[in-house]
Amino acid sequence: MVKLVTIPVEAREDEKAVKRLGHYSSAQSILVVGDGDLSFSLALATAFGSGEKLVATSFDSYVHLISMYIKAESNVAELKRLGATVLHGVSVKKMKKRTDLMSRRFDRIVFNFPHAGFIGKENQVHMINAHRLLVQRFFRPLGEIHVSHKMGQPYDRWEIEGLALEFSLSLFEMVAFRKEDYPGYNQKRGDGDRCDEEFPLRNGCTLKFQRWPR
Image (cartoon, rainbow, N blue to C red; front, side, top):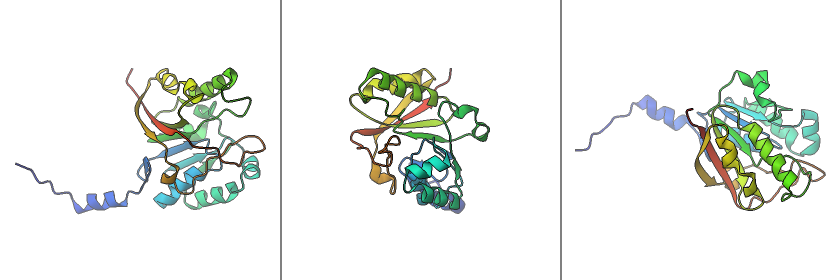
């Protein structure tokens, strides 16, 4: 016999009020790390109609950011208009020590296509090691962590899943990264003379990690 469950009107209305985009929803507290020209964060805030629960960060200072990316200034202004917190000069290496982040807890922590800079060719050992160190330093905050990354060589040599295990993080899902799921998002090279150019997203995936009990 099937048992019918009546859902209160208030609960149905609350569910309808939650807006979603890709893997994320307006009900979640979200930290976006190293967001290039901040277009990914803006895609989320725009879809949700609010950035109240969103913290968007850039590695560069504000002055450097708007000199690098043609849309950065307008993206920052729109994020703030939508109520998002926007932080600049946020280094993954020192993020855990920042007082403006230490007191906050996030449901989702997102790092799309981490990159340590163009200090050589992608398949060179010192470049692989630099990228691995960057991801290692990122795998410290609490919350469900999402890392979008390219699959195949030389990117598989980063061994991201193994790095996560060092911090008691286990991979529970891996899904294809679909740029079209995030209208307005523009992935940027982020370094050098071509910093404002997009890089190809072939074989991109989002890896989702959770911390397992010690």
